[in-house]
Length: 380
Image (cartoon, rainbow, N blue to C red; front, top):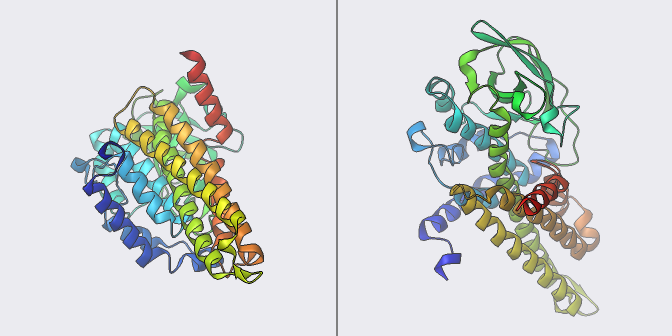
């Protein structure tokens, strides 16, 4: 079974992440959600374990792990709070893009503070007018001497207004994907501003806002990769981001399955625990089966992304689609098994129900995941 099992090192990483979650995240997550608290100190504490730079190279100060190890960490933290785990995932994606594609100058400038989460990074691709059609983005960067002058807006940005660094896709050339480049933009740069915090269904432990650029002068050295390479870099970042958001759905679904098992053992109706009813057992059996199937596919996809396999993008899309759809469905059934109590904030289920709903939308909608999968299949 070793081919399909975790190594001892991977289990140790998983156990460390689970312990951190039990100590630092789970006891506080309900309050963060209710009061819309962004737990920056917990993000910094996670970075102290290396979770702010999971697949940033060791040469750049990261812990240089693979995408399966990253998925294990995200899944473990999402058991306590999917919103906080997803926020840390996005920071990891943006930091990796700088490490993987940035010049030595841009790496030296930003990575030391990103690795420790002294500074936190956002990923800026989506715009008010370009969501799934990401290559239609309008934010423009015009080169003037040793600076780019950036104008435009980005929408639904996790960490907008709170984070220090914005890894931003901008148009430096022709329409379409080949005219897109990637720039690192600082919150403190003149002309950077933010919209009001979005009022969201879930993900209350992290701020989300529009980011506006009004003739922001960005040094040319802040270019990540070459001009015209931004869209490719953004999509490579999303392969890992999709795995991580899928892992967050796995962690949330596992928590709600565990809560449902415990509740149905204790809750009595018609003179016996509802866990003794065949209908309950069948429901739990389907939840467990779907969770394990999604987990196995996601772990395989993570290894493929680490190894740069030719079918990595298709597998990342399949894993994200299955894990996020299954996660939401599992949490929904956990809420049903709790009955009216599942609808109350006294129990954690409704928070997970709200938090996981967005996972089938972001990092590429699940409809776009099907487009990616179908396109690759019919190309062969």
